[in-house]
Image (cartoon, rainbow, N blue to C red):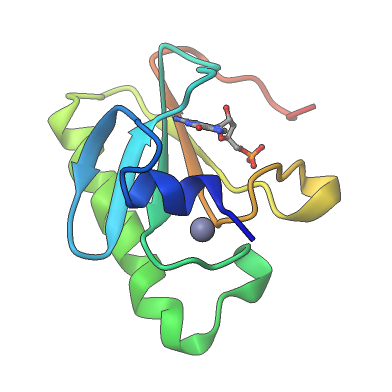
Length: 112
Ligand code: 5GP
Ligand code: ZN
């Protein structure tokens, strides 16, 4: 079955990439919910956080390292939010694990 985010990794679908290395890709969300809203994904297809295996833990660590680098490059000083929607009740619509990064506005709590 096709995967939108694998298609973005393989350049079959266009995206505004903001960071890329061997294992990780970050690109702007097509429907931004904040002045800064991008998604960080592993290039490897993993369906959701629930499917992450022990062999993937290093890869997940690389995602968070990439997030730190991007936040620094974007000169975001006042904080940001990281969201992972997992499964149906979590609100996951694309079944390729991704972390939303939102910034440049005050976030509310609790989420809806
Ligand atoms: P989820 O609801 O699964 O946590 O988040 C999926 C996110 O992917 C949504 O915020 C949606 O706007 C974004 N998205 C879906 N399809 C595309 C696409 O083709 N390109 C980009 N850049 N973002 C997408
Ligand atoms: Zn995929």
